[in-house]
Image (cartoon, rainbow over all chains, first blue to last red; front, side, top):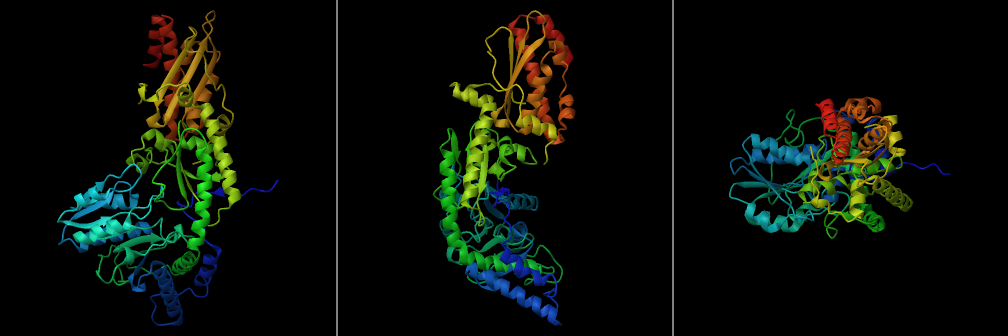
Length: 406
Length: 140
């Protein structure tokens, strides 16, 4: 019996480093350990060259100028810098920010923080399929709106927003457009200038690079956008983000970006085929529901609710072999079910029953086949234990029961 | 978040999973929780008329590993007890036995609620008002 490696289908949470990325990084831990800001010697110049090269590699992936890249510690920092930075820089123009209920906490919590500082924030509802309604969006724009922040692809459902149409609205009304590109960059083509996006945050560890390094794209021409630095101390990154650069991390990031640029299309095709297979097989089971717009979605993500079965319990039946995530309350620190799924109108019970599968570059067909079998067995086992499954099978209308909720 | 050995054991081999006939006079059914909360437990007891002791208990649970383990453990403890003894089962006994972390204590509370709901249902069905008051006093 072959030794089975734990199967990893949680790539939206983080990805393993591509070995080629780590190989590129190693010298910058040892003999090439210089600080990129050291002007006076070889160590510094070497480090600076490496950073410049990485900047170019990443700029190529986005099809923008390398000068438009600010290095950060990750997407969370990038979101903070973009939103707070714009709010402060453009305070004279207005104080209204528009975002979606389904954004990542890095965006939502930043907005909440700014509300205390005098910002007015509109958290737009989304449709049942996870997409924003463009008419609602346009209606929300006001004379004092300075920024719109809408993520390119959602981390829980993989749903991709209509970026071009949103950008056109922003152009029409003179509003800056920021996107959290974390789940999209390196996996699908993300060219902010072509779309009309002015700021984009993203991170290395979602694209087979190391954790702890990310970047914020800030448009330099047509329009020239600036952000007020959130971290002061030396004026690095054109005064927009101070601090010694994470040289090995940046080198790895650059390498990851180059690999992504070359292999993205091939990966996407292979993964969408595997994802479709997994989804198709699991949807054969009774009472399953795929969450999110399947026509506008990342190729490697599938979010499925298995009705009448709780997510954490279900994961426990196979988590010795398969790693995934769930929208169940039991898996969150706050004991609240996934706010993204709830915002889509799913209902708490479907949110509790949801599992997110996110495939990756190193996922094999064999692993997908094994996962399908393990999940299906798990669902059946949990349904045998479930009183609400029994009631459903007996034809009881669960919506009519008076539950003793506490 | 690592589960205790006991929780894993109950999860892998749950005791007394099943359904008793709820219209049977000797069966008390407790259904607690709500699908929106992610926790629903159905706990049933079958009482021996002659001895007044619980001779069988069954459960089904929609919930996480800790919820399933809590209700499974409850059915184990209920067998052979009198209703009065059963009403004295406290959620903290379950927490201790299963080594539940703070974030999972509410699962044990729900199990205790399920036990009490099953007892109450049986007593109401059998017109045992006095006994009902006695067991409710234990809860208070």
